[in-house]
Length: 77
Image (tube, rainbow, N blue to C red; front, side):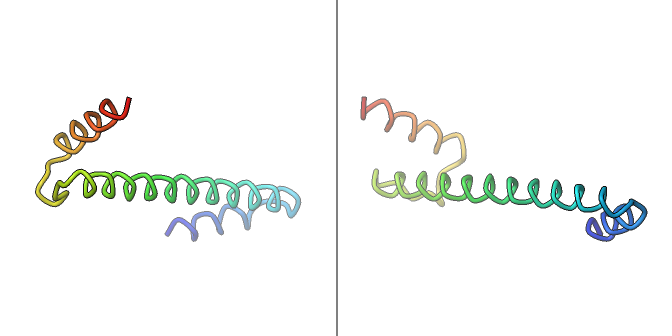
């Protein structure tokens, strides 16, 4: 749906402007993808830290996870 809207907008533009917009949209998509990957990596490391501390992450609420991870960070210092 979103790509159809973009295609319709790009079709009504002159070629030079269309190329600029395509480039900009591609850069935005790449930035979003990098941010998503970084977030996934961060979540994986948090889950790994919880497992190494001996907790079952499936039985913890999000607020409990945050508290445990913060305590773990404080203990390292």
